[in-house]
Image 1 (cartoon, rainbow, N blue to C red):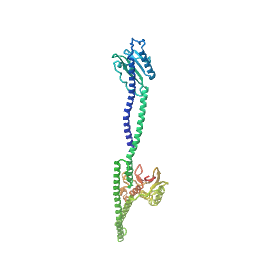
Image 2: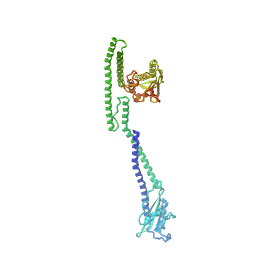
Image 3: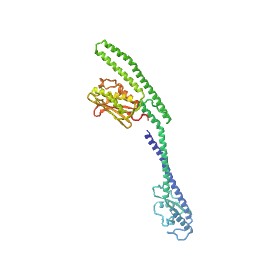
Image 4: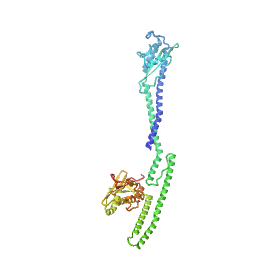
Length: 471
């Protein structure tokens, strides 16, 4: 969830920073240019004030009559150009220069300079030039009229390079970009802390839900930390878990009590049947049938009691050698398999894992017994131990008739038995007991076809953790 929520927050924060940063960057560029334009306006106004008192008049070319004010204007323009590198000039209405710097700079016939000159002839300052961006190499042209006796006698024109201005704009943008980057990093750090604070209770809730789903019903969610809504959810979840545990405990107690209470009357009934059989001819079919059904009912009650105890008992986890324990169970079941004509083969290398030895032994007994029971004479049952990663597995594969896909989905359900195997002895609770025993210690049991091309044989995989559960 954090991987989905964090990018969304980052995108939203980036959008906010861009929405604030882009207008600020544009405003910075506009302010820099406006400052340069104001300086040029002040400069042109000063030159216009000097040119206003020049007494010479154009006669088709520059006047050669000495004029002290004109010489002063020329010196000011030359000094201005030398110091700032800005071309400046005062041009008569005809376009002839009154004074200019550099000396070879003339009023062009067209272009931005000419347009500003023509606009100033209308007795107003030229419009502000368009915005110059750092990647452009444009120039700033400002023109102001020289008013004499109410008429425009000449026009002052300045043509400024924009290199320094563009450098200042770019420098300001770099500082702004650095500030935005720092703000983004701070925002990402805050978002990570915020998402961690918000999602930590969710992760704890998810882990606790998984623990309860795998049989660790004592797990509960800590209510500390996180938003108030999640703390209320944690309290509600704990209340729900308490109620579920109570209901399951009542159910287990009922099954255990019922099984225990029924065993004594059933034992007495079987004893009476045996006594009754003494007065009847040996091999009486009805008596044998009743005795067999009674023993089957006793086995079902024993299995029910074992299942209730398995679901209730806490696992005594130990670090054990799974290979050695499995080899012992294979050796214990080998005589029974040989008596049935089945080869029981084991490959049990040393592999350590965390498990309850008694519970794992009982589960392996049930699985191997089931495999030997349904494997025909002359076939084999293979038991293989493997340890890799954080899990160890014991695979029991037989070459029996196997199960269909529909039957495979139901195997392990309580009291379920395949309709094709109803004549085989059993109560249908053995694999359910295995699952309960393994789940208490963080293990599991799964079922699959032994051969993929056709339902032939059953492969049962018992899995136990190699790391201590809860660490």
